[in-house]
Amino acid sequence: MKNVVIHQIVTLIFTEDQLRAYWQKQESTVPFAALTDAQYMKLAEDMLAHSSHSQLEQHLIGRGWRTKEEAEGAILAEDESRDDIHVEIIDTDDSAEPRRRMLIDRVREIPCPHCSFTFYVREASSERRNWTCPACGSGFHDMTT
Image (cartoon, rainbow, N blue to C red; front, side):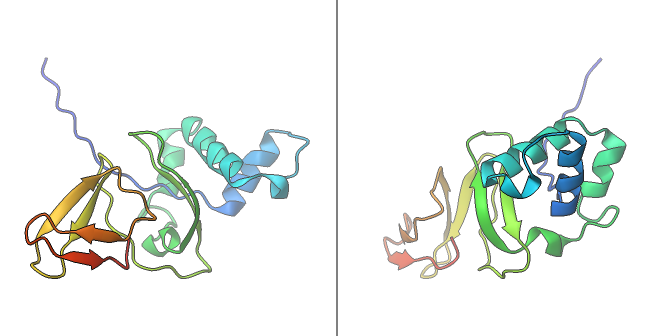
């Protein structure tokens, strides 16, 4: 038998209320409000790991109640330490600058404003904003990284 494997990026949204309800089921003595950003992300990953496929439907953009707008806002914390998952805590009440598209292998896409050449940088830190285009050699300050 031959199998076909398709890899794609899927955005799952876990709301604060959903995480709070999941936390309360854990019967922890630590209050939900006392969790750190890292603990919120770990909780979401645990919820992901313990959800059935049908339960995950409610967390997908365009399915159930989740909308694209729920994945937009100021990034409060993120974990990009693994190649197969990227976790962010987003404050949807706070607007944010447009973000660069992230490709599945953690390569950042950067278009040169001088020559329109697009290049890709692996492991580019989110703090870096100064780039030199490999095609035309022009330096530029990228406001959206």
